[in-house]
Every structure is written in structure tokens, then in C-alpha cells.
Image (tube, rainbow, N blue to C red; front, side, top):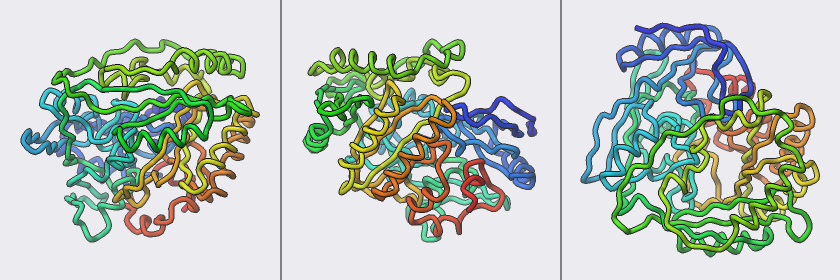
Length: 442
């Protein structure tokens, strides 16, 4: 059995924080019992880890032990008549797509990268561009297996009455080590997407266009100019899509060139952002309809390996909030005004509305309303000060932040935003922990 080895190079996707851990990478399920028992007894306990595409410290266990689950990436079964897939938690969404697309199926919910493990997707209850139609991935999980630090492995279904299933879906890996997942897939006739691109001039136009699009399209998402002001505040480009019907079922390639070094810190500044946003809005925002591969629509950033290095060695923070529908438009406008005044933000700022399909997860992030996600290069105190100001808007509006994306979420805002937190705490495995959870000081 592979034991724990000391590592200092394990980072979340935002590359903050940098820490020391003990890491083990098993290849077979029968290795887990010993590793879970060993790791959970040590200082700061244990956390299971996937491909670490969480941006902040929810996927890191600084000073403690971690189990890299990516070696446990075996498919258990795939019923092509019903679309039910059973796989180990370490299998990636990319590998699932390789298996299921030729058979006429697709992921029911996918984030903006396919380089996420199935276990990580469950632990963060991921959402996608089709939340208004499909909800979170938790709604599509039929069963999951979980090893606790007491050595007991449990099989949990949606009918579970103990609350353990609801706590594990979106539970940030704190209820135990997810080992297997049974996932219901989405039947599709083609691997191509029918896509329409529509520019909008301001935030009010976005909300009207989003409401219209969600009535007829499965997927909607918008890029927004985070530096727009005055009459152009909130201008952007909305993309809406549905699965095609042309019958092609082709797996998209996964290989991509990688960023070979950390970019210089001056790359992201007000001038470069403003120039990019002007050009992108007028060039990419031309109204058009097109057919494209699922790869190009769902995973554009996967075309650049290690793109997180573009933010430099100091790393970056992603800030993703959701604001309830009643307060979404004025609060989003205030957030964009604040970001524009600060001159910080990112080339890729994502704006989307969530539907009202509830997740089974106690700590699920989405609510009916609007989500805004931006990257902020780490400039130290000035960046943290801006994020604190955004926090105040989110809290006043009754919103919350996504722990999978945020590396500095204040404990008070976390507690205010997740009303089922006390109910969740009863299901935490005493042998599990993370840097995020200790920072919450709960």
C-alpha cells in the first residue's frame, strides 16, 4: 500500500495558499481503509482530493493528510439502455465523456472545465449553464458510497432519511471519503451544440434577454464587461445553446498546450483589461448562430493547459456570488460599479441566472437569482479590500459566496449565507478537515 509522503507543491487552482501536507495516492479501493485510518488520526486530520480545480482552500488540508483519489478512476458499470453510470470517485469528467458521448449520452450538469473528478463534482455540488433546466449535479446522483474515519463504508441514496446523503452532496469532503457514485446521464442525439450569440448594451437588457432565453434554451451564460460605466454598465454578450440533432457523436480531444511559466504581474491592469473588453465586445459580440463541438461551448478554457499561471506566481482569487432574484439587478449593478472604480477584475467575467430547482445538498451554492464570477489577480491588500467591499453588498442583498471558488470567504458571511449549516455540522466526520473548514472556525 502506498503511504503518505510529505509534499509542499500541492496547490488549489488559484494557487493560494501554499502549504505543507502529507499526500497518499492509492490505486485500488482496498487501500483506502488503512489510509483513512492513518490520515484521520494525524494533526489536522484528513481530506480526500481530486484534480484540485477548486480555486481556494476548500480542496486543501494544510498541515494535515490528503488522499489523492485520481488513481481510483475505474468505471464500475454503464447501462446504455437507461444511461446510469457507476464509477469510482477519482474518474474525471473528461474520461466520462470519452465513454458516454459515443453511446449517445452527456453529463447532466457540467462546470466550465472537464478536468474535475466525479467525487469532487459531488462534494461541491457543481452547477452549469443549464441550472434553470437541470439544477445541480446533486439532483442526478442516484447513489454514492462513503468511507468514514471509523472504517465503516456506507451506501447512500436519495431516499436516505438520516441526512447523510444531503450533507455529503455539496459537503466539501467533510462527511467522509466518497468512493463511488451512481450518476444518471442525459441522452443526446449529437455531440454538437446549436449556439446563438447576442450582445446586450447594459444590465437591464441582460435580465430581459436571460429570461427570454431560459424559456427556450437549455444552456445560457453571459460574458460581462466588468469595467463598463454609465450607460454601458453591465454590457456584455449572452450565449444560449441546446444540443444539436445532426446525429454526430464524436469525442472532443483533450490535449492542449500549457502555459510554461508564470506570467509577469503587470499583465492584468486597467489598460489591458479595458482594451481587451472593448475589442472582445465589438468582435465576439456580433449576433450569430453556429454549430460547434461541446468542447468549444462548455470548456473553452480547457484549450489552454495551466492557464492559472497567467495570473503570476502570487496567484489569484475567484469571487463567485449569488444574489436572490428580488435583489439581483440593483446589487449586481452596485458590484460592477465598485469593480470598475477599482480597475480590477478579469478578462473573463461570467454572469448567469439560476433557476428555482432545489438541490438535495444542505450546503449547495445556487439559489434562484443571479451569479457573478470574476478572477482577481492577487495584488495583496488592495485586492482583499475590494473583495471585502463586495462582501458587504452580497450580505446586504441576502446572497452568498461559493466555497469552491473563494479562498478568503469570511466565516460570518459563510454562516449568514448557508441557513442549513447547523444541520450539516451534525454529519461532519470527526476525522475529516480542510484548511477552509478550520478557517471558518465553526
